[in-house]
Length: 238
Image (cartoon, rainbow, N blue to C red; front, side, top):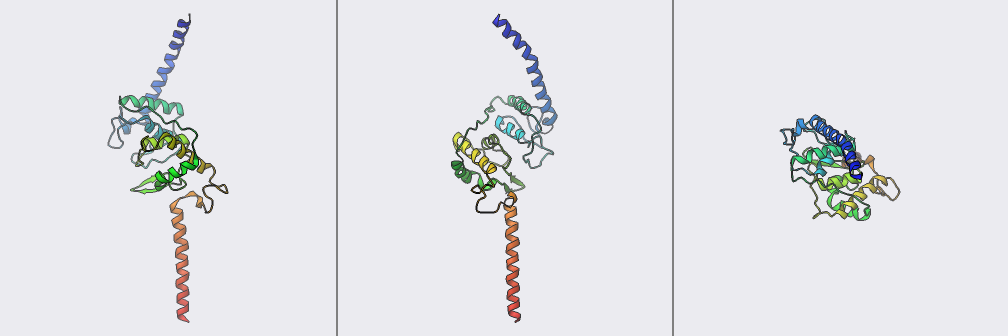
């Protein structure tokens, strides 16, 4: 009786599974295939997805970078177009394009924000800024602001290496290192404006990063220089 009941449950779930698989295929063909190819073989406007690990595909969808609004644009984080279930379905649809693609997604647990700050400064701050405010890294590439990134997305980015960002494998940053970095970034986001938070001792300048800092430096620097020149000119005239 138990076996018969289990068989009936499986038969009942089969149409649901088939429908979910069909929905994932439809979503991929509608939103992804025109750039990445019908079977992930790539085109002149987008790279192939064959051999791409699940963490990379999931990250690009989870952060709203894909589907791109137009071919060739700099992918920036935005609200995802798909639900989490749809993202998982598309990732599952893409993985079979290659028999050797890694299906592992990072698991981020409670980390040490103090240790993560040192690791972030050594491996991430050069591009993302000391507090994760983001910056230009040259050639129209931008390291984005991390203000809205979740700890899971930080872990995905470290392991996936999206865009020009290097991919940090376990031999470079251990799982514990990833946990600590992710929780430091989360701490910097949620405690930024506290008295002893990441902004203590300075002005946040709306978290606009080096652009705002450079503008302020030029504004005050040029202003001080003009006052100095005026003073010299006035003294000479006397």
